[in-house]
Image 1: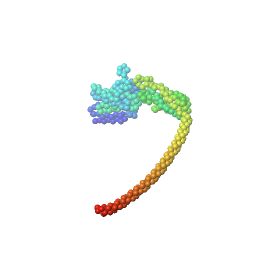
Image 2 (image 1 turned 180 degrees about the vertical axis):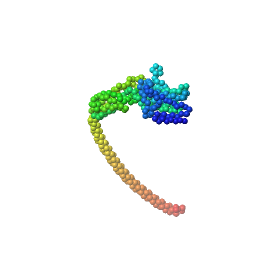
Image 3 (image 1 turned 45 degrees about the vertical axis):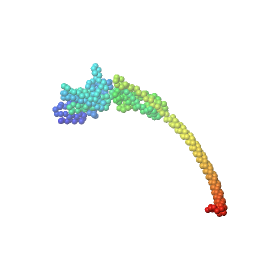
Image 4 (image 1 turned 90 degrees about the horizontal axis):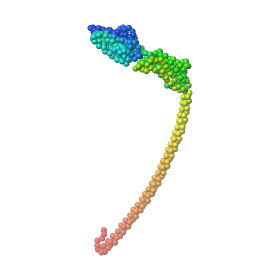
Amino acid sequence: MASVVALGLGVFSALPASAADMSLSVKVGAAVASSNATTALAPAAVTVPADNTIDEADVVRLVATVDTGTVVTFSATGGVKLVAALDNPAAVRVRSTDGVLSVVVATGTGNTATVYAYTTTTATGTVTVANGGVINTIYMKGTAGAANAISVVAPSAVASSTVATYAFSAVDVFGNKVSGLAIATTVAGATVASTGLNTATVTTTADVAELKVLAPAGGSIVVVATATVAAAVAGLATPVSTVAAMTTVNDLAAELAKVKAELAAEKAGRAADKVAADKALADAKAAADKSSADAKAELVAAKAAAEAAMVKVEEVSVKRAEAADKAVADLTAAFDKLMKDMASMKAKFNLMAKKYKFAPIK
């Protein structure tokens, strides 16, 4: 085995001694074809297909020369796509949506395989070309096309006498940010903070273009921005050359007066609530005191009634006891008289029994 590592070129080769090394021709756009010299830090740059056709200026042409009858595999990452041919208005059209991420080419009786790589993004992507254990990596990125749309990020509201910032940006038809675009702005209801005028031109950078407007005492601010953008292309995003934003200006003095009025109303409401609460508490206490007094009076009355009832019960009990004692005494006296009478009768009987000779009563 023979191995070669070329870090600067992003190339790794490993092949049997019996196989021929793959050679790769790299042609960037209209440049002259050469061997691969792209790196992650210095990728090949081509224009994005802003006209929706894949042309020579939009591609990196990759021609791999290999052994006859072998297979070459092309694989793309990072937004890169691959096509087998360029756009031909007289035959097959190749559009910006036609690419794939992987292409396998069998050389058959030949010894070359050709693929075209393009991208719609300015981010760096790769294409790896593999054959018989040999792998070659190409780094590439797109160059943003002409501005297709502008946009604005605006505050929904600002305080009076403060500075409102409007951020403008521009993108090409694929959403890549565009720098250097002049955007003309017209301001209604306020003035540009730096010049005191109602018009200004801002230029986009890699991020945004900012417009600073001095807010008036009240009302609203309307900012309208226009720019020259590319013509519409069938099948791609519709151009946007004009955007507008409206910002409400909050009058701080009026808001403060409103807040004070609301606070005063709130305090008055709370005072009224306290008066009502105090009255409710006093009414509740009076009701509770009355209920307590009524309960005490009822308790006293119930106690007096109970005591009177007890006296009556005791009187009845005494009378009943006296009556019972008298009844017992009367019964005892009657019994004693009866016994006396019986004794007298017995004596008389026994006298008669003795006189007439019959048995006496014992």
